[in-house]
Amino acid sequence: QRTPDLTAFWMEVPKFLQRRNPQQVLLLDENPNAADQLETIMTYTIDEIESFSKINVSQTTLALAKIIHSASEKGPAKGTAHRIFRHLLIGKIALKKERTLFHIAAQHVLAAGKFDAQSLSDFIYAFGIAGDVLKLEDEKTTYGVLDILAYEVVTRFEILAPPQVFNILWAFANVKSPNSAFFEELADRVIELDQIKTYTYSARDISNMVWAYATRKAKHPRLFTEIADHMVKLYNVRTFTPRELSNVVWAFATVGESNAKLFEKVGDHVVGHANLNELLPQALSDIVWAYATVGESHKELFEKVADHIAMMDNLNEFSPQA
Image 1 (cartoon, one colour):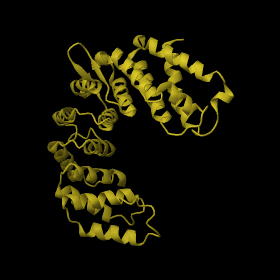
Image 2: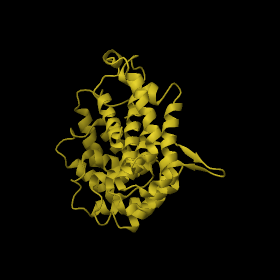
Image 3: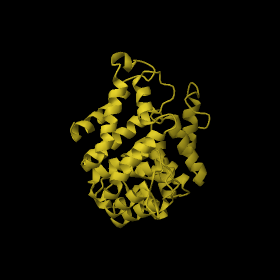
Image 4: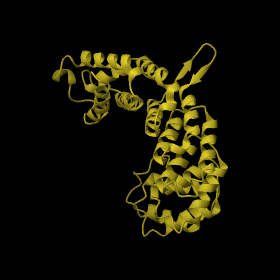
């Protein structure tokens, strides 16, 4: 078996699981030897992972993380593909998951400087999907896997495209990494390179970035100020979808940042819509919550939202919290 073949196999498994209902189709009925065969492939993969190219390492790790996430669903029927992969990669108390990812990390994290931009992004994203704060140890020190990778991100930041940056931020936010300095250092690099002012980031990229900072409760006033100033200077905010705008004001409110001109501009844009049907209930809730939280008054916005809600047939689409 060649490395590319192993990588290609693992990359297909998440797609295979996605097509199957966890409660249906017994894989063992189709192939009674499936569990043993998969165990052999898994063992061979772990044994050979040290010799994989960096691209194959990142793709294989990302595929395994997606499988772990998919197989983590509770209650798959015995003999289904989800149950087999759950046993193979997670085990009863998740020790297999920890050992598998730890082995990959131990082999390749310290050589992360050799990853290209996409491979570095995928590798970090994989640990984010798995949701574990893995640590490596030597005789004197314990190192967090994401802490080591954070250094590579900050020092090689200029090679990363905006979607790759977001995947990395999402990973750090999802595992609740204690490395708060990383978010500060990354924001400093964004500002240093003038990436907001020079339109490096699209509306979607900006929305994703502030969402990640807010989810992590990571404050960086200068970054949020630059983003607010950038959005205020735009002729209009039509390039932002309603969901992206709600993400932005929600994020500003969550980290305690208020900008009167930004909130006025977003509010005016929402009010200018003929109707608010394209805004999902959660987005509406996030918007009014954000304005109330930061104390920004926009009478027309609240009247527009109130009128829209009053005309709805029922409020079942709103969650109790919303």
